[in-house]
Image (cartoon, rainbow, N blue to C red):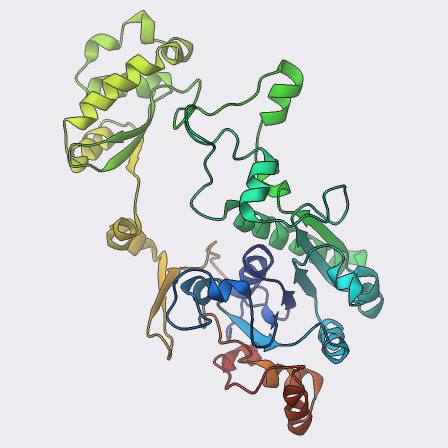
Length: 414
C-alpha cells in the first residue's frame, strides 16, 4: 500500500494454509501492513487449489483472500530454508501460523527459539484445539471446530441433522480474533511492555466464545439448546417466509409493538387486542399458529409488494440475498461494498471491499492474491541483502522457488 494505512510500518510474516491464519494476515494487509506469505515451493497454500479458479494453482478464493500480500516460496523442511525464515522473523513484528502443534518445534522454529531471536515478536498460533490439552495433536478443520464448539449442534431443524454454515465460520471468526489479539499485543508492547508475546488460539474457541448463554443455561438450569430451525424461542413471529414469486423474505416481529404493526400490515387488526397474542410469552406458546398466518399472507404476494408493505408499516424485514441479488442491489452499490481490483492476469476481480471503514486512515486493496513465489527474490534480496547469484543457487537447490516476476511492486513501499 503506497498510502498511509494505519498499520504502515508493521511487518507480518505469515506461514499458514487455507483460511484462519492467512485471513488474519489479510486483515493486517488491508490496512497497510507489509505481509510476507511463506509458501512451500511448487505447492503453495492449499487454498490455491480449493474451489474453482481462473488458472492452475490459483483459485478465486486465493485471488480474493490473499490480496495485498507478497508471496515467498521457501522450503521450511530444509535447514537452509529454516535459517532464511529466522532471518525474516528477526525483523518482523508479527508471525501468524497454523501448523499442527509441534511442527515448528521440530524445525527449531517454536516460540522459545523465535522469542530469543526477536524479543519484540508477537506470535499468533492457530490450531484445531490449541497448543496444550489432551486433543492438541488432533487435526483441526472448520467443520470439526464448529461441531466441537457447540455452534453446530443447535443449528438446523429438529427433524434434520445439524447443519454446517455455508462459509467457513470458524476459520473466519478465529482469524478476526487472531488479528484483534495481535493488535492488543502490539499495543502492549509499544506502550511499555517492550516485548512481544505468544497468542494461542484453538479453532473451536472463537465460535464457542460467541455461544452466548449456551453454557450458563445448561450448567445453571439444565437446559440443552436444541435445533429449532429459523425460529427464535421467545421471539415470535419471526422467520423466513416464501413469497408468491418464490423469493425468501425474513421478518422479525417478536417485540410486542412490532407484532401489532405486523398485524396491521396484514390487515388482521382483530389480532392486536386478542389476549392470546398480546405478549411475547403468549405468542411463543402459539408459534406454529402465528407463523402459519404469516406464511399464508406472505405466500399470496410477490416479494417487492411484501417488502414494501412491511417496511412502510415499520416491520423489520429483508430479503435473503444470493450473489446475483447482491450484485444488483443498490445499497451495496451506494456503500461501495464490492471492489473491482485491476489485475493484469484476470482483468478486474470483484471482491468484498475493505471492512471496517476508517474516516482518516482507510484501508485499500492494491492487488489480488499473487502467483506462487512472485516476491521471493525481491523480498530476500531487499530485506536480507542476498545477492542475485546466491538467490539463483538457492533456487537451483529447491530451497526457494524459481524466479518469478513480482506482481506487487508497490508492496515494497508499504
